[in-house]
Image 1 (tube, rainbow, N blue to C red):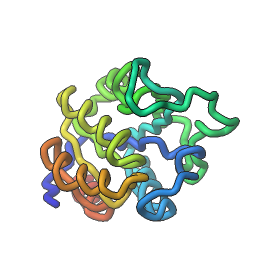
Image 2 (image 1 turned 180 degrees about the horizontal axis):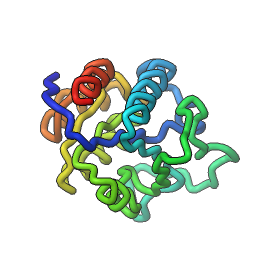
Image 3 (image 1 turned 90 degrees about the vertical axis):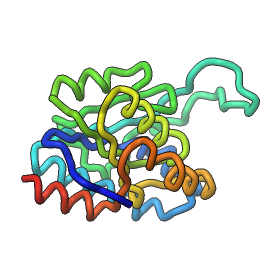
Length: 186
């Protein structure tokens, strides 16, 4: 883990912490992931920095070898969890792909606010979080990943993303390290 700096206008992106997904069996304690995401959201909001809350309400079209669920989501499945303490000025994005930037206005909303760096947390490490990190990197944002504020249903996917993918996309660190950097940059 090698965090160096946070840009003056850094945004937090919280991926898929929604009622339907947090109910799945996950590799790490979802309560701890949610608690750390909330700590980061509170710290960002306290400094007037953008917080983007992302949920997923569909999937990209196209054939896949592994069948996808084509049934409608149950009522409330896509609702963001209340523990995130959503604020009226938070950016809220609904995606229908793994990553939060594809086919959404997230990039425009961040650029309008002058954001040059993103901190990403959420579920699932190897899909939603990693895809969002890849897309942010490809759009030219500096990327930081709070590795203790994310989890996956597949432990091996979580571990692989953290060890092999994330260091190529940005910097990784723990929630408290990021909060400490925020405090020093205030």
